[in-house]
Structure formats: C-alpha cells, structure tokens
Image 1 (cartoon, rainbow, N blue to C red):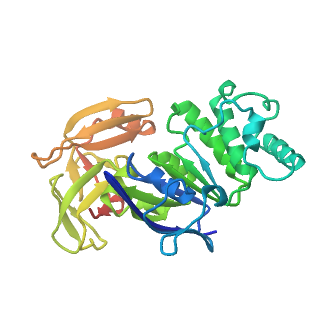
Image 2 (image 1 turned 135 degrees about the horizontal axis):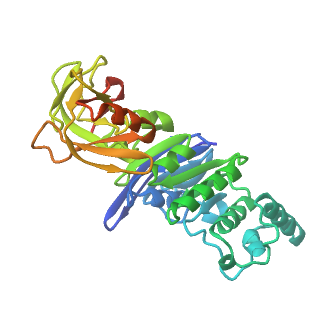
Image 3 (image 1 turned 180 degrees about the vertical axis):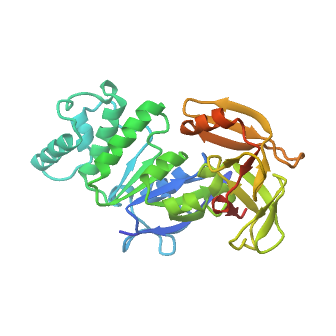
Amino acid sequence: MSLSVNVKKRFPDFSLDVRFESSASRIGILGASGCGKSMTLKCIAGIETPDQGEILLGPRVMYRSADRTCVKPQKRNIGYLFQNYALFPTMTVAKNVGAGLKGSRRQKEERVREMLHTFQLEGLEERLPGELSGGQQQRVALARIMAYEPEVILLDEPFSALDQFLKDRLQQELYEMLEAYAGTVLLVSHDRDEIYRFSEELLVMDRGRVITGGKTRELFADPGYLEAARLTGCKNFSRVQRTGVHRMEALDWGIGLQCKREIPGNIAYVGFRAHEFVPVWGEKKENCIRFRLAGSAELPFEKNFYILPENEHARENLCWFLQKDKWELLREKGLPDYLELPERRLLFLTG
C-alpha cells in the first residue's frame, strides 16, 4: 500500500509544505519539536484540512483540493494513536475497545473479545482507564484501533511523556504487537533511537518541510544535510572551504582534510560523529586534530571528552565519546596526542 502526501497549510506563525511518497510498511518522521510532524499526521488522518494539495492511500483519494475531495476522518480507515492514548475515562476497557465498531451486537462483542485476547487484556474488561497502568492503557488504545482493521496506523510520539525504563518496555511491547500488522505504520518522533529501531524508511523534517528521505540506515550513515545530521545524532560540525577535488579546509576545526573520494562541489559543512574518532599516540597522521582537552565527563557507560579546535576563534569544542570497553586503553597509554578522523566517516553536508 503506497502513501502519497503533497500538502500545504498556512498557520499564523508557521507554514507546512510536505511532500513524500512511500510504499514502506514502517515509516518514521524525525524532526525537532514544532517542525510540523504532528500536523502532518493530522492532515493524513483528516483532523486538519490542508489549504491545498492531495493525499492518496493507494488508489484512493483522501484529500484533493483541485476537486474539493475531503474524506471524513471516520471514513479514511486510518487509526491514530495519540500521545495520551485518548481513552474515554468513564468507559470500561471493553467499551473503549468496542467504541465505533459497526455490525450486530453479537459481531461487536465477538470482535471485542478477540482484541482483548490478542492484546492480553482479559480480566481487565470492566476496569476504567484510570485504574490501568501506562502499558495497559497503551494496549487498550491499540486494541481499539486494531478492532476496525485500519489500513494505516499513525503513532504521534506515543512514548514522549514516559521515563526511560517505561519507555523502553512499552516500545518493545508495541513493536511486538505490530509485528503481525500488514498495513502501514507511520511514527513521528524527535527521538533518533526510537526512529532507528522502528522505521524501514525515514523522512527528516525541518521547519515544516521534508528536507530528505530514504532508507533509515542509509540516511543515518549519510544524512546529506546539516539539520538531518544533527537530528541523527552527529555532534561535530565545521564550515568547509573546498580547495580541490580531494581536499578541503575544515574552517571551524582549523585543520585540512584529504579525501580519496571526490568532495562534492556544493559541500557547505563537514560532520563527524563523536564515537568515530581514532586516538593516535606519537606521530601525527593524515586527517588528525591535536588532542587539547577542554573538559570531560564520565558517564556510566562512556566517557565524554571535549577537545579544543585548532582554530582559536571557533565557538564550539569537538566531542569525543569513548565507550566503556575502551577505557582500559587510556589507562594503559594515557590520553592521546591526536584524534584521527578516518575519511570514510566524514559526512559531506549541504546547508
């Protein structure tokens, strides 16, 4: 099932202009808070009406401004899992799951029993949402969505308000419950780990627009854009001046970088992830920066080192994050003289 979205909507202080098409079964939208992720979901669901454009689910038109088509939310066959699960507080679990189901009383009761069994809610039928744990509430909300077999499920930052322990557990539960679902699931989040774990294809949004998209793992490896690199966890950036087909100056770091691959003519920045540095003791190698420590922090499973750039006028230090299994190397050899930036790990970025 393909999902095609091409919509524009103007708000008092914000403009949404989103275009993408995907046939993936698990799609992630990554972006900072306020970039338009949730508004995109609301347009797909029919909760918000765009000013212009179209939304297609397979061959079916959900919205098209040109001929004024706008299918009502309840007829789009799209399930929307809100951040707070949006359960009816005065209705029992069973009634929440059955809300909106069509058919005879017997058919509805049978479908509810099936969903209660599938989502491990048996024995909780008569409880109210306020008497349930967070995980149980999530299962009720998902059971209610799955009861009417939607073609698309929209997940709107369903874990954003949870502490890390509960978040990890509920993520795993949700993903296991969705394993057998044959439709399309679209998850929006500002959490890169959540997106990486969940999605097959990824869209990166910034200020109301999709700035890049593609296979999730490929985009993390080569984001292509400065903001996409930030959102996927890169910590170190420098403006660059391309001085040749295979050489550039990292202006903010104060070092030159030599590359075997061709440096794109439109490059504006170079990025380097904090875990990718290679410590060097003794003689300087190619693509190295002097190790001049500005500060450090020890965390349970890694040490963070903050390194002064060789450009004395630069505003930001470089970050080197060292995993715990490599601490012994520093205890044996001391702090390095240089940090090497292997060419294959350099991120060529446009603005």
